[in-house]
Image (cartoon, rainbow over all chains, first blue to last red):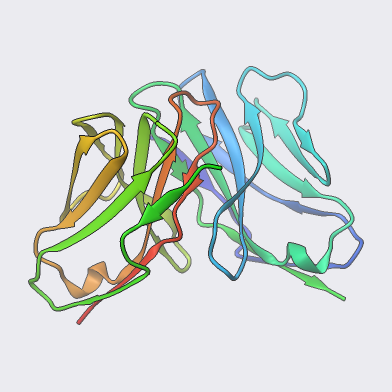
Length: 115
Length: 113
C-alpha cells in the first residue's frame, strides 16, 4: 500500500535560517511524482515544488529545494533563509502514474518561524 | 488562472441527512479528487475520478459516494451524515499524469450535529 510519512508534527526555526521538513514515502510503483504544498492559516493549498521519480537532479524553486533520496524513499523539503511568512502547515504528497493517478498526502508539519 | 470552486464554505447538517458537496473546475482537468482534512491526520483521500463517469475509491470511502456526470463537476455525497463526518472537505483537480500538481478549492467546513 502507498503511504506518506511526515514525522515532525511541529517545527520551530529562527528567521533567516534554513530548515528541513522530513518526508518518507512507500510505494512499489517505479513511476511517481512527489510534491510539497503549503497551507497558511488562511487555508488555501499552495503548490511549492515537484520531483519526478526519474529525475536525477534535486528540484529547486527559489528558496525551496527538494532533497530526493530515492533509495531511502525520502523527499525532504529544504527552505532556505526562512521568513515570517513561511509559518504554515506543509504537506508532502505522492502521485502515482497508474491507477487513475491516485494522490495521497502525509499528516503535515506545522512550521513556526521565530523573529 | 485555474479556478476550483466549492459550493459552500460552511455547512451545518443534522445526523441522518443526505449531504451534497459540489466542486467545479474551469480548466478542463481530467482528474478530480475529494479529501477530508482533520488535525493530525493530514489530507485523506476519499474518492477520485480520472474521467467523466469514472471513479476510484481512495483510502477512506466508507460513508461517501461520488458523482461525475460532467468533466468540470465532481460531487461528494454523504448518504446519511454522521457526527464523525464533521470535517474540512477539500476538492482538487489536475491534468492527468504523475507530473502535474493539483489545484485546490477553498474547502467546505461541514459540521454534523
